[in-house]
Length: 281
Ligand SMILES: [Ca+2]
View (cartoon, protein in one colour):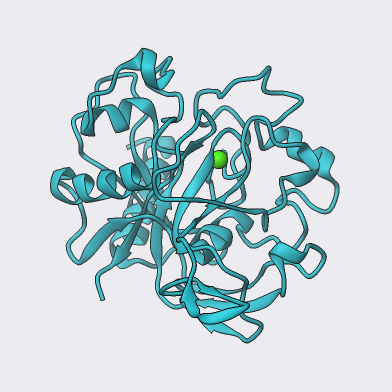
């Protein structure tokens, strides 16, 4: 065996031991999972990146809807999609009329999909990913899981720092998108290898949308129902969290903490999702 072949074997065995022992080096996020859902050659695979448990400060005190900043603990490792769900992936679940849905390519993010559609897509994945790890289940990410993954260890306003100009490298937004969505993965990934967390399409989360609590939280899942702040005996119409901004968001808005909301049936040419794969509890 020559030296380069030996180095290759050592490298592969190191990677393999990291994967099977679940001992990713500090600062990396460990092994991926690739869903087996019968995609064709050339279609972007549904890659799930393993995210290590940890703590972070969620939200920012500088923006009313994104405050108060509060400590959050993510108790378990989980996986989140490397990319937004694509038209090719969603199309395996549900045949759609491309004209009606405005779909233009397998590797473009899905669009005109409601949160209800995305929840159903997760259920379909649970039944159809023949390689899904035992003891794990697909669902939409919680808002906390989403922001933790978006920040990828950053503590600044934007994933690139505190200067919005750096977001040009990471996101399709108002002034670089040419008025349209783009193939997923066309911009620089964040430090944990996740693409298009900011811009391109907004991403549905699991949680109902409400003001943040001020105390530290562990694995927050949002409220069970939305109460009228003026009369807590009344329940408000449910709206759910959207994160990340889209292809027509202004670059200055692409903070890691940016929040938006819509009802379960809302759809548009700037809304889709990214799925999570979490331990069954
Ligand atoms: Ca996005």
